[in-house]
Length: 281
Image (cartoon, rainbow, N blue to C red):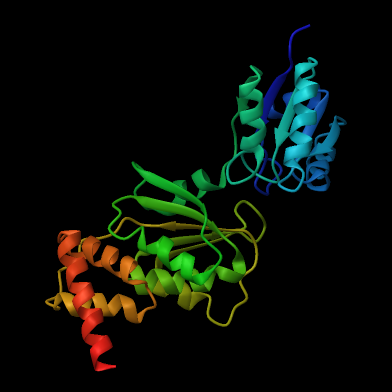
């Protein structure tokens, strides 16, 4: 008997009917399902009368459990990998098991289906001919602002996940750094309380004023739009970013993106600006 196969099975985001016939058949016939949250997956299996054995595989046990699952695959046992919702391996530890399997010559079979990223893009109204998925935005404000700065001038849609308690901070930073871009905020996709809000970041932020944000959140940010260059001296542009708390290096990066000027020219002006401020005390 040869090695088993690792099936990467996409499962519903919320609505249990959003699953393919092929996915149901795989979950019924494999000897073992590795699930990010066995309690959540059990609800899905019960709904479809599936009695397959479950074992946990998540970010807190992936190193140890991954080796055990690999051993079973090498023994000829087929395994289906599922996440809490959507397609495994997208911003979850599933990719590590896939990597282990590939490295050992195990066949990895995709069973495609729901994906929060694609679901939101499909109804966003934003350009989808070219997009970038960034996973979760950095949780700390300073790193998040530096991350957003890296999106400045990008001519493609960006999709990311965000924790509900950090959504307002993300929107505020998008307004301040990117100049109020078009965004789509999707909460609880395919669930009873599905909520999709489109507009400028400031408009979306206003919709959440006085409300506690709940549920799983996906944010799509539209491509950066061309804007008329303001006649502001280079030193003023640099100071604008340093006042926002950016380091000199990041302020230089932002101004280079904004103006298209050579980095050396902007950097020399930044050094002069800092020197003048230090002399003035």
